[in-house]
Image (cartoon, rainbow, N blue to C red; front, side, top):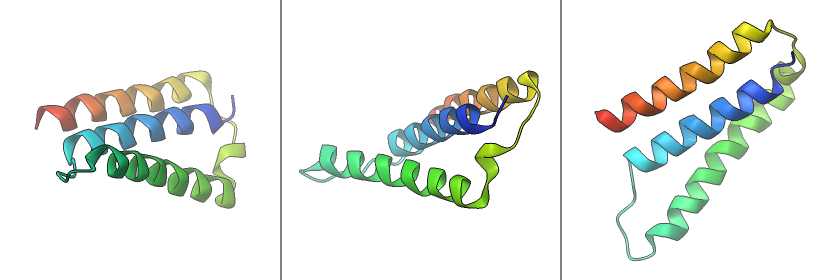
Length: 80
């Protein structure tokens, strides 16, 4: 299994957790939340593509562990 899918899911989960935990309180909040969400995703995926991290092969269980780690991060950041 390549790391592309687990890294993409991990990125989505971390970005959604950070954007939900630290919202921007302005009158146009939804626009800033959308921009910051896609900006975080774009930066992380661009770094992963440029460094070649997405093309590395790992065991399926390691990929599932990466996804589970992202879910745990998201649940913990929302409870703080």
